[in-house]
Every structure is written in structure tokens, then in C-alpha cells.
Amino acid sequence: MGMKNVQEFRREFLKMAGLGMAGGAVTLAGSMEAQPRKGAATAAREVYYDVRRFGATGDGQTIDSPAINRAIEAAANAGGGTVMFPAGVYASYSIRLKSNVALYLSQGATILAATVPMDGLKTGGYDAAEPQNPTIEKFQDYGHNHWHNSLIWGEDLHDIGIFGPGLIWGKGLARGEKAEVDLPASTSPGVGNKAIALKNCRNVILSDFSVLRGGWFCILVTGVDNLTIDNLKIDTSRDGIDVDCCRNVRISNCTVNSPQDDGICPKSSYALGYRRDTINVTITGCYVTGGYQVGTVLDGTWKPHVNPVRFYGHGRIKCGTESNGGFRNITISDCTFDTCRGFALETADGANLEDITFTGITMRGVRGAPLFLRLQSRMRGPKEIPVGTLKRVLMSNVTSHDADPMPSIFAGIPDHAIEDVKLSDSYFHHAPIESVAAASNVQMSAIDKGHASSGYGQAGPAPLGPDGIPQELPQGYPEPNMFGDVPASGLYARHIRNLELTNVEFANQSTSDTRPTMLLADADGVDLFRLRLPRRLQEKQFRLHNAQDFRLFGCQFYRDEKVDHATDQTV
Image 1 (tube, rainbow, N blue to C red):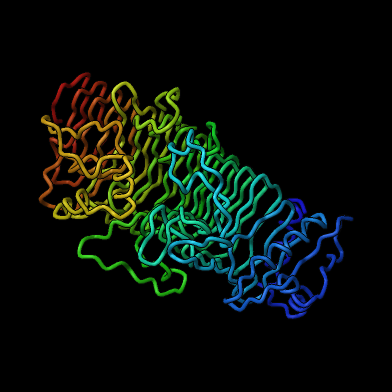
Image 2 (cartoon, rainbow, N blue to C red):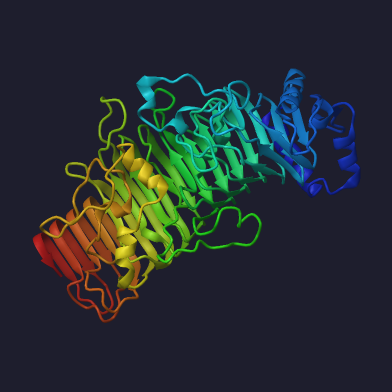
């Protein structure tokens, strides 16, 4: 079944409102044999396979994955088809996808990741992870290096899909390499750690279903081309959607709550054994958050995290940190960030991160920096890969309200500047300065601690240098709080060339914040036009440290300034 037929099938079922038409439901779910599709314009036979007819019980106790895999095999052997999951709970270990086969999760259908004992299983359980490759595995974490140890997986496939209004519940999936209170370690035998994992596939549709607690990654797609992800609802504790080394990707209309890791995350790792760019990616109409207890977005109770300090949830959209290849032609538009970290572009391992558009974004309650652009030299990859680039980034129509008092950060390193960044028609409101210590020095999450303990970066924020400028930290793990208490309230930009801000307002709520609005260090070519600052701040709001070709003009309540070169001065 080709991509066109998968799309036609999806439209047909959406018209039936989740099998709401009784006659259609009986015909499809109740047939003893796979039925040919009637009235098809093509001579190709399109058929539907009910997993119950292959032995699945849907009782939530019996392991149904053998029956499900028999249904998939039958569909594949017939040349393609759609495997149907009627209402029920299908406890499963690994489900193996095949080319030209789609899974349809009916309303009320749940694929449940079965539990595994804390010490694993000597026989059975989830499929074993692929044999380790010491040459490349050190360049990214364990989760990125394996796909088979998943609830649903496929490799070297084409024309596949998973869709329908049902649920994938990763109850028994591990979250990391080490065991937790109620979950085994990913490395134990028979353990799975991802809800959906695809490697080297093409023509893939994932749409309309929900995922609860998806393990280490809800969705990990590596080397996948022509990928559509639409209208998913994901409520999980680690990453929501990881798009790694993929081309021609469309992610739209998704809701992701991921308090302890990232929401939607394009990456470009070395997991395939070679560098491959993530290119031509569109993310639009999505809602990302880290502010709610896992499960409460899906059940509609929306219970916020209870914490005496502003909760430092993840939940954001981020490119990186795995960044051996490159990121090119990325468009992110019409998305909402809610109680999570801000937008991040990170090249740490040699990636060329270029031609990025970020527009039409609403942010509320951002923890940390609303915008974080970071070029550095962690270089977790083959030695021959050079330091990367970060250039040609266009950001516009961004509204950020009630963010932590940490400024946006655009930071390169010596001899490797960020280039050609434009920010326009945007509004940034920051919470009072009284919470800046909490924003910068908040206790790290378990995930951050894992990064630090694995040698990925420093254990916490660094103090300022003797000149009052944040330290360079070229090899640290890239996060905004790595720089400590940044001495700027709106924007900190360092090692940057050709920076332009137009029609941007910085609204600092605090009356006691004495930091300048901007700190521009090692900056060349900064053009600021029609900025709005709090009316009371009419001087000394721009600190220039080793900066040249600075121009400020057309700003209400502030005089025009032009500085050819500044060693260290405020204007």
C-alpha cells in the first residue's frame, strides 16, 4: 500500500469519526477474513486485518504482540494493508512494522507496553537492542544508538503509517540507562525503552493517536525521509518527538507535555555511523509545555507541578544537542510554549546550523532564556569534524510573557561567531529580578544531572569572570543556565557578527533590576532600530565589551547612538 493509499484510508476513517458509523465498524472489525476495499479507483487490492482474528485478546493481561505481528506479516505478505485494533487493551512487547502496512488504532484501543521485572528477562520480553558499536556509540547516548528495543519499531521500511484516535501507553518502558524506583534499566535483558522507533525509512505517516509515558523517547526517527507527524497528543516524562538525521519532515498540530525533557527536538547525531543533515523541516501549529504532571494533559485535569520555586520544566522545541551533521532549512511557526524552557538552537559537535525561520510564536512562563542560540565546541564526535556554524537565523512575531528574569542568549566562542541573526516585531516580558537566583541556579533536574555525571558538561552554572562577563565554557553542556547570573535583563550576545533587532520591546517588570538591557561582547555589526525599553530606563542600558560598529536609532525615550569601537562602555 503506497503513501497515496494510506492517506486515502486515513481520510475515509476520519469521515467516519473514529468508526462512529456502525455499519462501517461492523464490516471492518467483524469480518472473519481480510476484506478488499470496494470502489477503489485503482486495481490494487487494499485490505484490513483485525488483530483479534489473529489471536489478540485485548484484555490488558495477555501478551498480544505475537498475534499483532502475525497480522502485520499477513498484511505484508499480501502486498500491503491496514492492521486494525478494535477497542481494547493490547498488552505487548515489540511490534515489528513492515513496508506497505499501516496500523489503525480505533477509538478505545490501547497498545500497552507490558512490564518487565526490574532485573529484566532471561528469555522473551522486548526485542534485543542491536549489538553495540564502540566506534560510534560514545558520540550519543544509549537511547539514540538503538531502535529494536522498542514497543513499535521498523528499519529499512517504506510506506508505513500509524494513525487513529487510540492510545499508546508505554507503561513498562524504561526511561534511561539506569534503573529507577519502578522501572528497569534500558540495558537489562528484555527491556524496551521507546514507544516508536524508526530507522532508515521513507514515506511515513504518524497521526491522530495519543502517547502516555513513552519511555526514553516517545518517538525516535533516525534517517527517515518524507515524514509526516500530525495531530498527536503526547504526555510523557522524557523526550516527546526526536527527529534525527531526517529529511523532508512535517510536524503539525501536536500537543506535547514533557516536564523532564524536550518536547520536539530535531537532532543530527552520528548514530547512523556517518554524518547526515536534518534538512527541510517544518514544525507548525504545535503546543509544547513542561508545566503539568504527566498524564494530566491527556486526562484533561491539567494539574501543574507543585514546587516552591518556579518549576524548571523542559518541554520546549530545540535543535540539538546531538549535532554532528547539520540543520538546514528549518521553519518553526505558529507554536505555543507554555511553562517550559525557551526555544533553543544548539550546535555543539560540528553541525552547520543554517537557514532557520522562527515566527508567530507565543510563550508564557518560560523558564530560563526565551531564546537560546549557542555555537560551541563540545565536539562529541569523530576528531576530523570541525567546529560548526550558526548563521542566517530569522526570528519574528514572538510574544513572551512572564519569563524568568534570565535574558535571551546568543553565544558563540572565540574564532567561531554566530552570524546574520535578525529579530523583529517581538515582545519580551520578564518576571521580577527577585527570582533571578532561582532562574539561574535552580536545582538541576535528574536529566541534567545525568548529563553532567556522564561527562557531557559542567555540573552547574559558572560564576562570572573578573570583568563581569560570563565565562566562555566552549565544551560545556549547552543550556542557558551554564552562564550563571547573566548581567543583562533582555539580551546577552557574545561572539556575534551582523545582529539586527527591529521593533522589539523588552518589558522588565522589576523596579530593582539594575542590569543593562543588553550586554554585547565581542560583537561586530549590531544594528538596533525602534526598540522599546521601560520608560524609566533612558541611559546606560547597553553595555559594549569589545564591540564595534554599533548603531542604535529611532527608539522612543532613548537617544540615537553610534559607536565605531568600544573596549568596555555603556551607552
